[in-house]
Length: 169
Image (cartoon, rainbow, N blue to C red):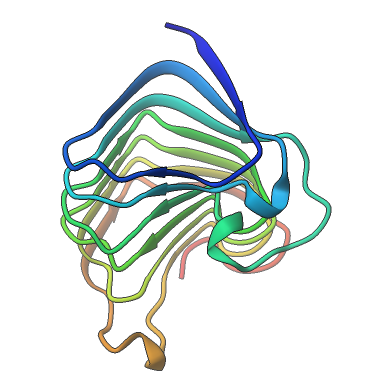
């Protein structure tokens, strides 16, 4: 309980059904490799803070997305906070049947919560974004994704300031 762990490399959670339960904090000490990747079905993260020590610029690679949900099913983030990110705070790329429940994302260089890559059947409940570098919450489909995002519901969202971009897109 209340454990803090520093990491300088991308962390990857690859076991289906894995539970990461806090309270606890993961502190990224290198912005270029600050990401935590959820790369299996049915991962649950509950009451964990993901922080980055500092950022100097906006990055765009997966390694800099603070929390990345890959193309897997059944991932849940509950009562999770992200403070600081060199890119998007929470990046949902192709995940399906995912839940973001009471997540808070602050002080990012890009979107607070970015859903793309054909992400689908997602539920985003009472998210809060604060001081994001781009959109607070984005559901975005690009031609190269192959499939559009669909069936994503966002309820009771609070967007408290963006440096550039929209509250929701």
